[in-house]
Image 1 (cartoon, rainbow, N blue to C red):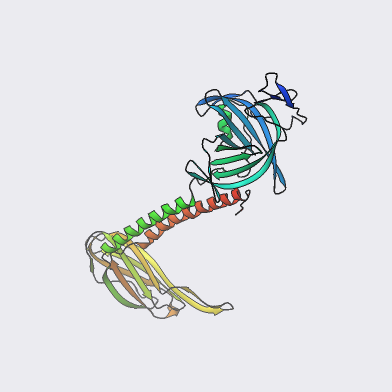
Image 2: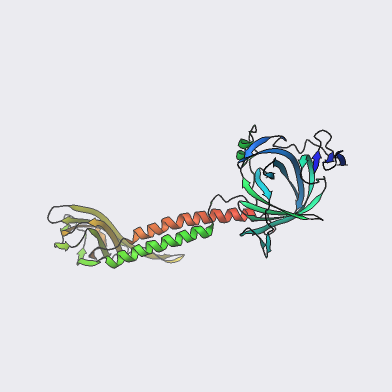
Amino acid sequence: MSVVCGNCHAILDASNENLAIFQRFKGKTDKAKPLIPLGSRGKWRGAVYDVIGFQRRTGNADGESFSWNEYVLFNAAKGFRYFTEYNGHWNDATPATALPEEQAFGTKYLGKTYKHFQTVTVATAFVLGEFPWQVRVGEQVRVADYIAPPYVLSSEKNANEVTWTLGEYVHGKDIWKAFSLSGEPPKPTGIFENQPSPARVSMGEVWTAFALFFCLILAILTVNESFAQKLQVFFDSYRFQQTAGTEASFVTPIFELKGRTSSVEFKTYASVENQWLYLNYALINADNGQAYDFGREISYYSGSDSDGPWTEGSHFDSVLLPSIPSGRYYVRVEPESEARFGPIAYQLTITRDVPNYDLYMAAIGALFAPAILISWRTFNFEQLRWAESDHPR
């Protein structure tokens, strides 16, 4: 419909066999040099296209002017398609094949919902090459963008008609490779309206997956809890006072761990008050001498200061030994403390086959951490995206 002379930049009417001039361009050409030279040829989406036209459009939003570039591509069998570029962000656009259905907060196209992003009036500032419509410098259209990243559905409305195009976010490097262009494409700056989120998944998908795995962990815990014996196999009370030259260690009576190989829980209670008690434990198999050594400290302190009462530590301690075979066992106990503390009473309870709740909490934490991280990245990205729209969040 239109051809723009590369020398004088006059716009010619291609529908007129005499190529009548219907507009002469008076602007400067060095400010709108195409990044993709006209005449470039490349294979894109399975077909060979020629770049035949270029235009720059400008607009104003919230008192700030902006502009973007559009390239017209042509294939004799496929027809026309367009590349658009704004601050290094590229879209591959084609004419819509159906009329979108307008909705309260957006529009629906081929079963997919698009949210309204921005509506602005733009003008054609510079043109070069061939166009399938009668292009004119200074011509204004009302552009409305609706997004469903990585897609953007755009309408252009003038006094006579409304046209719709569907764009898909693409990377400049792919265009440069397809059209064998020299150098590198401009690096993207900022976040574009239909730029895909780096998280690649929505927060809804993340938390749905979290909920499914959380339920699975709870189910496994429930099954484990129902089959766990939680059988108390030993209990006794003791009294200890640190005395120089006195052997404080002792062994308990023999007790039996029955059933399959499973955990053994040691629970200790000590009546410490601004004191500490350290216990060297060793669970020893009475038949083969296999020993499981570990130490536990119990301390409890309390007081008050300018901020009020405070406490530190606990009277209780619990530790779980995993995978202890069945058999006859006893415990060697070596208590330590300070003589100035005086006598300290403590109790030891040993229970067979107790579920390791820490493992389940760790598993839930391992699920929760990436869910929070991905959600934060997605939320922050979307906040920055929509800050540029008519509906800032």
